[in-house]
Image: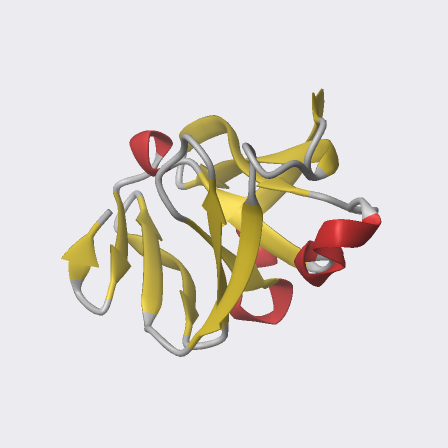
Length: 120
């Protein structure tokens, strides 16, 4: 990391709820908020708080120089699909090891992502 670009991981106890196609996809008070230079905050949730049965792994991959190689899931429920809507870092770089085992959500691909009842 550089002084110009920061990636801060903040453990928060806010309630984060993710919905897709009328179903609660995730619900947790154990989020990690990522505050990264140039981006709005992103909430990462533990997998045990996510309906993993609604996620399908994809072949899509991206590289973030500040977090590592990202892998993706699509969300599928009752005939509706959100392609590559969930991402995670299987082996995050050492500076952000706190992301291991957590997933994040593209708010524009899902019905809603709320933090303490307020939409992101």
